[in-house]
Amino acid sequence: MKKIFKEYHQFTEHEFQKLWKDCLFVFDTNTLLNMYRYSRATVNAYFDVLNELKKKKQIWIPYQVGYEFYENRIDVISEYEKSYDDILSILDKAKSDIEAKYKDHPFLDLCKIKEEMNKGLSGVETKIKQAKKDHPKWLEKDEVLDRLNQLFDGNIGNEYDEKRLNEIRREGKERYEKKIPPGFKDDKKPEDKKYGDFILWCQIIDKAKESKSPIVLISGDVKEDWWLEKDGKRIMPLPQLKKEILDKAGVDFHIYTADRFLELNKTQKKSIDDNTIKEVRKIRELEEKRMMMKRMEAMERDRELGSRIFERYSVEAVHLFAKFEGLMMKIKELEICQRDKETLIYLFHRARELRNMIIHGVNDRVSIERFYRNTKEILFILSKIIHSEDIHPEVAVVLREYIDIIEHLNHKF
Image (cartoon, rainbow, N blue to C red; front, side, top):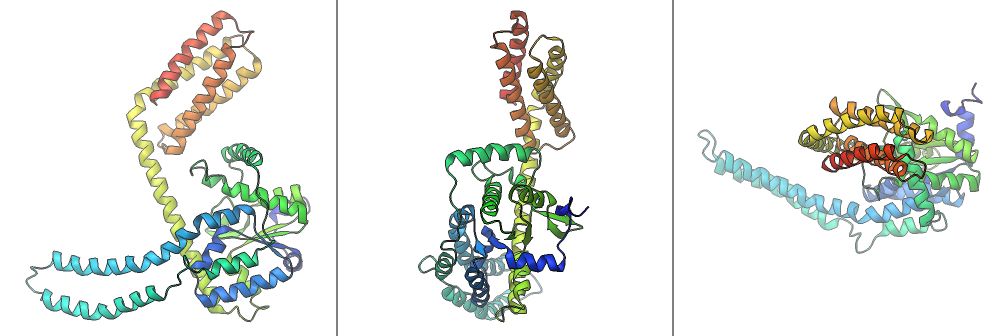
């Protein structure tokens, strides 16, 4: 069974050793950006490992990773430079809030408390200001960027042309609708951002075909469209990913977090100690929490937006559902092309599923948008039928009435 269902099995110790020896290590965007978040000692230790792998010709990044790195680099640098001022502002606000809220407290001497607070915090504030002063000025001189450029010189994939990118976007749309990994968790992102993971995946597969080497991805991405999880624990890459790269490129695939990657290198590099691994793990966990909070906030915004939209247009939505039901009954009786009939019935069923989701409270922005797009597809098929040379005039009249009603309701919805 293992030979047939290889993607569901973890590597044995022997298979792991062979994988580690023969593989190409591929790094995602987060692992590179995190170089700005580590201490200098950890960065130096990390680069020791990467430079050794470069000598063995075992490192590579897709073009998409390089592009995303440059797109996000300045934001990450600014984020840490701004953090010092944010902390100082929090301390100032705490002092001001206490003074404003409890200035008339009958049992506390606020003047004395304020004096003690200023005295106690002055040393802390001085240290924060000094740390800000000592913080690397990466926008002026960026040694991290210099080292990454040197490391990946000659080890980066080619850019896709616009034709190939359009093909990937069309395929990605279909895959996301069917929840085929990776990338479908980014479906809520803007159109120019949502296919980044899938583009990266296509570039990895192309490299695997070319190199015939197993792929080990070092990743900071924690979404469930990459990992198989059980009870909050990551077990291995999704079997679908392992099977796809095995089918298309004939190679094995695995994913490690950056801290696990360094942990496995610890026996080979003396520069990797427990403190280095702990720091890398801590940064990863903080980033995971930050990303989780962003996703939760986005979900909450979507729910609120979906609720407002549905409440505002609920009457129109009910009318639209009713028209769909009536049209579905008519379609079964009308003499139209069997293929078009089957397509419409399929789209009607999808509309019904989305309707049920929305009625039962799943009224986030994505559900609303999917319902809208589904309706547009129905209108497109109906228009195509009307303009067909084989359509009977009476059938065209019936469909035209429905098109006018659905267009009007869908525009309002």
